[in-house]
Image (cartoon, rainbow, N blue to C red; front, side):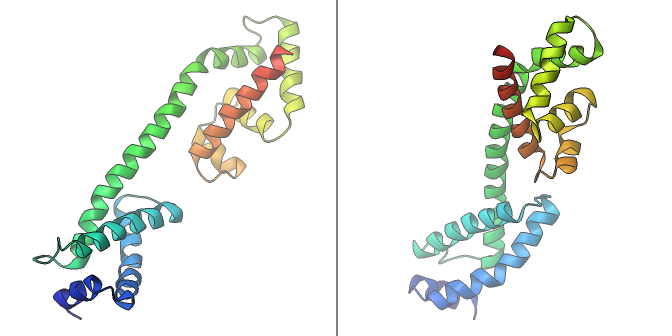
Length: 186
């Protein structure tokens, strides 16, 4: 089916054509995301494809592609570029909000690091901190130990603890610190 016939069929609400081109373009689009943009999460690739295809679909329905000179696939990939940029911006916003929390943790990093290095913290507080971390159990005990005492990166911690990515490990570390704060205040 040529481009004009495909566009016309979609405008006439032929669901078979929509399903056919959706299935036809998806594998190539997902591989493009993984290769060019290094997006390894299947869920993210599917979400970006779905958003891109939805825009393509509604642009066809509104008649915006009636005089399209490029192929439908090329047009879809152009939409995909914009959606990827938006996706990265959204992700950066999430990371920044986590980074703000990390900045709040700077004092805690010093306290935790100093606690087991024997610097600037009394023995009672060091003992209380060790007991609080021990009482937390896993995964908090492991994550805090790997980060503060073994100085592992969040990426390494994610790999060692089985988290999907470093953002998941980072969020868990933040929650563990909140839990530790509560323990220390008791």
